[in-house]
Amino acid sequence: MRRGAMLDLVLTNKEGLVGDVKLKGSLGCNDHEMVEFKILRAARRAHRKLTTLDFRRAGFGLFRDLLGRIPWDKALEGRGAQDSWLIFKGHLLQAQEGCIPTKRKSSKNTRRPPWMNKELLGKVKQKKEAYRGWKQGQIAWEEYRGTVRAARAQVRKAKALMIELNLARDVKDNKKSFYRYVSDKRKSTENLGPLQNEQATW
Image 1 (cartoon, rainbow, N blue to C red):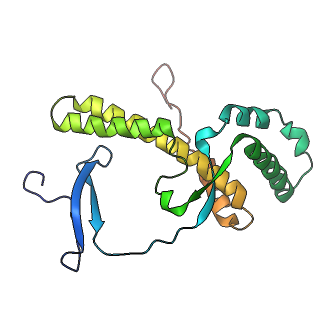
Image 2 (cartoon, rainbow, N blue to C red):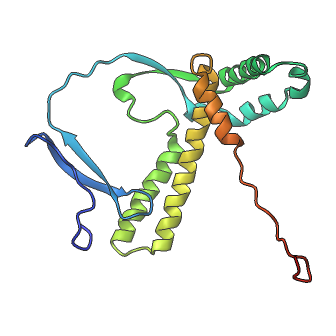
Image 3 (cartoon, one colour):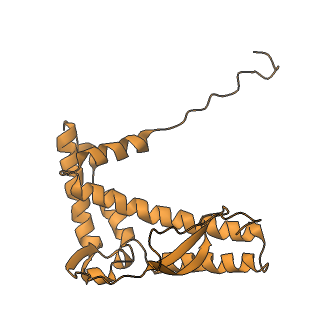
């Protein structure tokens, strides 16, 4: 409840289906709060082995260094778009293989996304602690907002890196997503400079 208004709801069409409802902190810096709840029904979960990139043990410094050593102008000279992409993809996957190890894990442990490393977990924990402190009047809104924005920036950066690696790996089977991503990256906003000169005339 906020000022007499119900902002966050959990709706169900069957009594007793949902339980253990908890508020888990604000969603960003707005009035809405994340709601955690359990669906009270029996289910059998199938476990299967998955292979995923282990970003927690990745050597991103070496990854950037390996790609930076490649003479791209010479490697892509005279190549068409498709050939250039295949060359770039080959170098990127080769660097990924040497710098980002893989690991096998059961699907029962896949609730945490692969990009969520120890540092990001700390940022998310700080955000939750800051939210509790703000709700209890122990810290100012500005401090809480700064913590939220810092955590959000780190999460977005980690997600973006994982998206780029996945696009590079799967582009052959999902070209539309790759080209859409490249198109969005190339979009830029151009601003006109002032139209007045120093004498304030047009």
